[in-house]
Image (cartoon, rainbow, N blue to C red; front, top):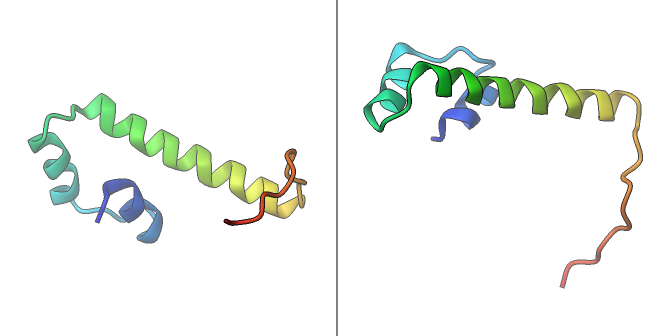
Length: 64
């Protein structure tokens, strides 16, 4: 499971091993924090949009 998805699905209750797995493939602590920042920002803006029923600012596109 992807780290960002795990953060969302587990309400940020990630294990040390999850962070270690990112470090093992080359991410540093600053980059891990940046991933967490992006997840938090997306959740925050999505919650605001849902709470205030913000309209989508582009027309709906029918699936092909």
